[in-house]
Amino acid sequence: MEINKPDYVYDNIVQINDTDASRKFLANVFMWMFAALGISAVMAFMFNSNLSLEELVRDPATLQPTGLGVLAMISPLVFVLAMRFGLNRLSYGVLALIFIAYAAVTGISLSVILAIYTASSVFSVFLTSSIVFGIMAIAGYTTKTDLTKFGSILIMFLIGIVVASLVNMFLHSSGLQMLISYIGVAVFVGLTAYDVQKLKNIGAGLAYGDATASKMALMGGLTLYLDFINLFLMLLRIFGRRR
Image (cartoon, rainbow, N blue to C red; front, side):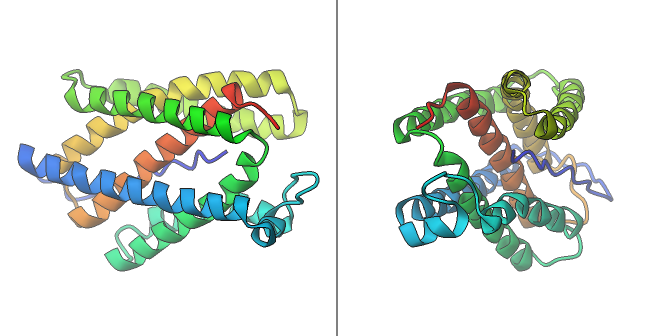
């Protein structure tokens, strides 16, 4: 599971209010998100279509991950932590390189997971995820309701999902896995709206701090990228057709 949500904090808050700045900020956020998704998609396709690359991360006969494949599935957490704790220490260029590397490694790890499912079901779930994500992003941007209180509840559910997923690694319960997936869909649908609203407020100058706007846009792109990837994976576990 990708989950790995960054929860970064900005210090030295100042008050500004600029709707145009908010739109420009969100445009940069989505640019980073789409760039990361594109990189991940390319890497996943390469490691699914090239036999020599495929054999590096999984056994073509059993579709089970190799040692390198397991490493690729675990290592994205390291990149997220590096970006989270290096936000105010690393330069924008270094953060960007880490983000690009993270998206590439995530694409490789996704190739191991996607190999289990048929190409048609992967495409249909991806399309469904894109529509749902788009609707909730628009809802988060346009709603006048403060979603902060809902965000706190969703984060609690997210922690519960992580704990339940870790427990299920030992139980191997298909029923529990399906329950986690259904709850996960609801959580990441809600988090998409919450995160877009939060980023809209950041872009308007409600939470500027030590990090530059460029860094915050990059981290915002990472946040929405994780929302989309996790929503996609949860839906795939529910509706994906196995080979």
